[in-house]
Image 1 (cartoon, one colour):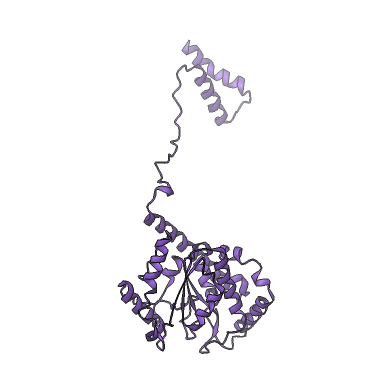
Image 2 (cartoon, helix red, strand yellow):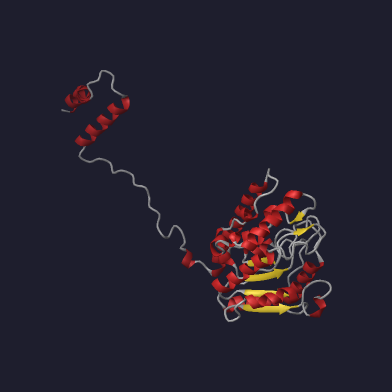
Length: 322
């Protein structure tokens, strides 16, 4: 019987596929189907192993430290993506429209239509004219103008440190208040911040002044004015930046809770009127500059106080050590 079936298989193939030269794949399919039909105990098909919940640890079962590291890595990736996007926009062009350099979606969502307001339109025209003229270098570089917002998404903001305007020396400004790129001499204000950190929390004084690590942890390093002419402090003041950064502060106050605002110096402390103190925490001290650090900045212990407040609210503290 098996011999007869085997000998008649070719004729059955031809019956199913009468074409004199059927495609080999079709013949093999037919043979396999017929063989399976006459096989009373076919081998079970291999099944792909389905992943179970035990293969991947659920987020809810992670420790607070593990969750914090995951969120930090996410924010680092977002910051790098935003920086790359801004850099690509600027490359090969004389200048880019100002509003195109704020690329972090969470800020665009909470500041809808801000760039269409009259003051912002005038601000954009002013900054774009300054950038395109090339008469005097403008700091920070274009792709870093909104670095504070692009590095610290709105939903991640836990602490706000308000500065004045960017450093006006070559290579200093990087779009984060008080911060300078690695390899740049640490300014006196930042050196005093590091001294207070050492006194307050025992942090070792770092060899660089790049505060990006703070930014991705949720510390919004916001200057009141976001651009400046080379060697001309406050040269872009009263051009509209103050209204924009006020809108940022008001939005944080209105749409978030439990944010710690560090207001150093009279200029920053004026912003307290924009903050709902029933929802947020405000810590005030003298400015950390060489002229005033000894008048109330040293000894303020704002860094340990900030972490205590965050922990009391069930929020992960800031790792201030660079």
